[in-house]
Length: 150
Image (cartoon, rainbow, N blue to C red; front, side, top):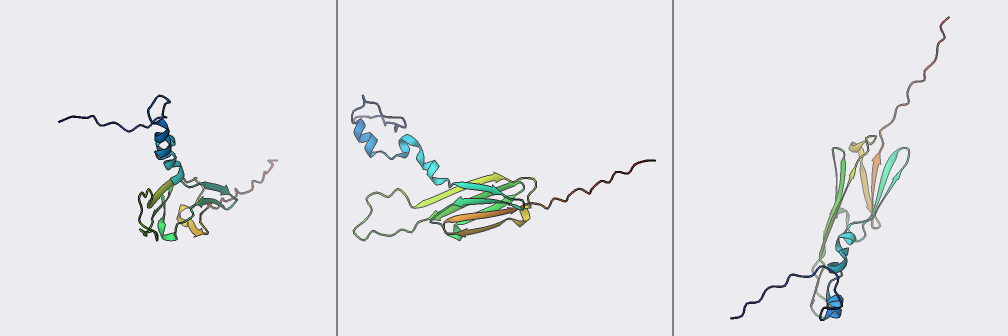
């Protein structure tokens, strides 16, 4: 009986000296060489500030309201989503290869000191999650009147 060593999968760029390097490049998942999978799963976020609130706009198309979880714990805001795609058979046959059916992501932000974390509100519409973080009312300092001493 012959013993063979198991090859460790390559995670570096192919070299010109490898045999079949062209096949390896074109048949390997893109993530093997570029690590794009982690970048794609994290949604883009825009943060804006007005006098009364902070607003986060998160691009998250293809999800539903029930897929999101928004939590404010102490001074940390965590937004996460999980979505499992339904298993549907193709009309013309079956899948020979399927590389996606579930996605999830999570983003965390430190809340500023001047926000009211108890009144954070969120809405999801047209593929965009909007989170509104109201600022605490800042009381203007009392005006000081100088009195001259005679």
